[in-house]
View 1 (cartoon, rainbow, N blue to C red):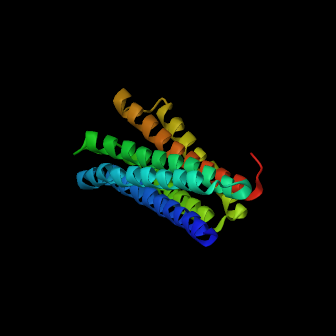
View 2: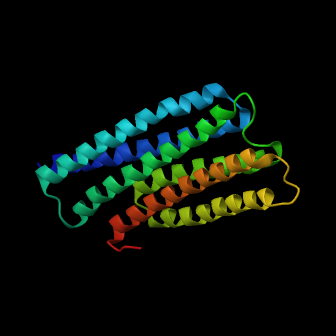
View 3: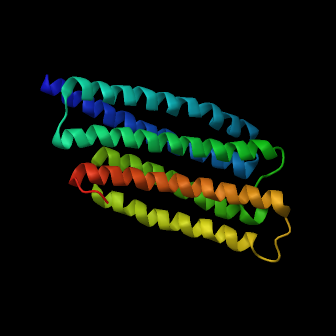
Length: 213
């Protein structure tokens, strides 16, 4: 019975890693839609969100079943409660990728991002994918050092986010209010995506150490 119990926990852990991988794929696809004005990539991102939502529902049900039938305590209780928090963060990451894709879709066949800002959003997309990947590594290995690296990556995302406002607030900005709103929203979506990756790392750190941040 005890072996089966830990197999259930390992299965939950594996599903969480798979969800982070999917979130990374989603933000990568959304970034491609955004930078290339690719309608097909935007539509695939929107459709792909259903997979993450389904996974969250199934993993949450799995966790609740473990709690109801096994009565986990101490570290095992931290494992299952952290899992519930992590699924919520990953689902939100998927939602944010969809928000990016929807702006790309709304502006199609035009580009939502002016040419002078595409390199910044390319960097934000790359950073987001790397952070999703690291979040999966942290869940898999429970390595608190890798978890700490995510905070450094988040600083890079924050720097990129702030750089957008330097452009938007410059007197030379001539793209109009609508474009400015798009850029501000898009920057916020990437910044929040990164924040959720950091939150995942925090949940794992709590799981390992038992200490709240």
